[in-house]
Image 1 (cartoon, helix red, strand yellow):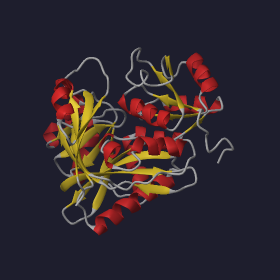
Image 2 (cartoon, helix red, strand yellow):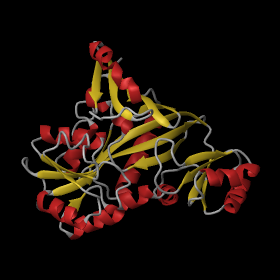
Image 3 (cartoon, rainbow, N blue to C red):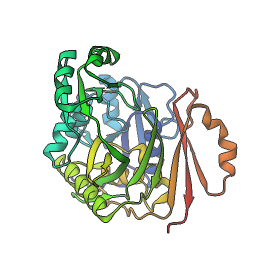
Image 4 (spheres, rainbow, N blue to C red):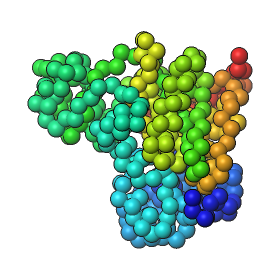
Length: 361
């Protein structure tokens, strides 16, 4: 561990990205006494409005990175599509970035991600790398139909993916994702979707929050219920998977791990997100230390916080114009409203969320 850790209050933590995750990271950092610096190409980002300072520039702007490096003691990122070369440039300028470049590189390519996960002992669905419609035809012979076709890189909240219904659909499906390099995944016959928010400190300690049960609509997370009702065996599987993944990456920070629970009780990893995660927003009001503070603690080299749940929470995302219901939500006795302060409420855009609490049984 570098001799700058544990990072003392008053230090500046740099955050790449200006969205709601960066906003909540900045709020958590301020509570622990840290200043924050946001780097984002957005001129009026919701994160910059609560941070100590901001640089508005493209992520790979050399002058911006130089200025960023003069202020930030350490850096982190709020989304995984930051160009990997930016992390290398910051490290060359003497800024330690957490999570590190390996985690970012793995998460940015879905084929590499699946290969890494299986190699780390975290099982996934069967898959095949796709570069042409002919590859889809060949893969369907092994994986079966329907199968899920996703672009290898980028794409989130249901974007950049489509179902291949049959061999006859291969050409059209490849066109639907823009004929980009892709991954074809076997269909998972799951009974429900779960996720776990896990953290690893600079000392190698791994800590997991209670898993949540997720419900999606149109490829977008609609709500998370946590702690999920799961068996002891399922909990052991989840915590083992999390420890294997984070340790194999020499990870520092919080990670979201999405899983499929199968009928026979086995768990498969759907994907990982090397950052704080939407399905962990319930921890803001439901745990002693929430995922955002936990990430700041890890990045700063502080001890990890306690993940004990204090309440049963249903987290619901507020999409588009749903945010206009804030007066009614604010009046709910056991609801905790988180408004992201964004401008235009476009359909499907995450504008905020609400945590509804009830006592643990």
